[in-house]
Amino acid sequence: MNQARIITLTIDGKHVGARTDETILQIAQENNIFIPTLCHLDGLTSVGSCRLCMVEIEGRNKLFPACITFAIDGMVVFTNSERLTNYRKKILELMFSERNHVCAVCVSNGQCELQSLAEKLGMDHVHYHYRYDNYTIDATHDRFVSDQNRCILCHRCVRVCGEIEGAHTLDVMGRGITARVISDLNQNWGESESCTRCGKCVQVCPTGALSERGRSVAENSKRRQFLPYLTLMRKEDEQ
Image (cartoon, rainbow, N blue to C red; front, side, top):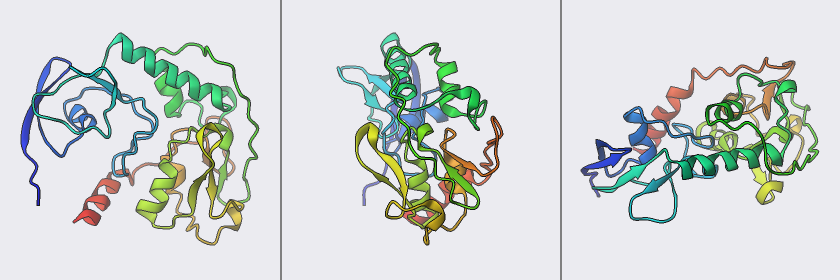
């Protein structure tokens, strides 16, 4: 059985200690160093899909996703540079252009992680053409609504449904920007026999893609009191 070793590395000029089983993102968070994320959520498996947490590593030309890159002794990491800022803004712009993220009429306006990151990173306009895809809104569930027009395909809902709730109701159909989250075998959410109606998927959704029924503009507040238990449950599963 491999034992984690204690190592030292440098992040943004700051010398930090870490374990070899920790990712760069975990180490940065432990040392109050901000790295933007959207698909990552403590307690769920990291997949590195949104690419917002990309960092630079000295001696390497390409960028690395901090949430799935493990630290190495002596590593020198940069989390904030002009190159990274430009990449992150372009990623956000692509997310906004791929689907409908008109914040003024969104149930999560003011409480949306995509919106907050755009403000924090200084994204003030989109350079790409909007696709304006028109996905059907699934309002067949008696408690929740799924609006794929606002989905950023972070897969948090899919992971929490499978890894924590164990229902495996939600999954992804298709590939690329045309992929979308579906219920069971692409049937209406309200007709799903596997959905436990727990609502974890709604609470971890970073945007207004999943919401509780009856919510109007800016009323889709998240109740994430259960989130600290995600990490605990995952650790218990791994033991």
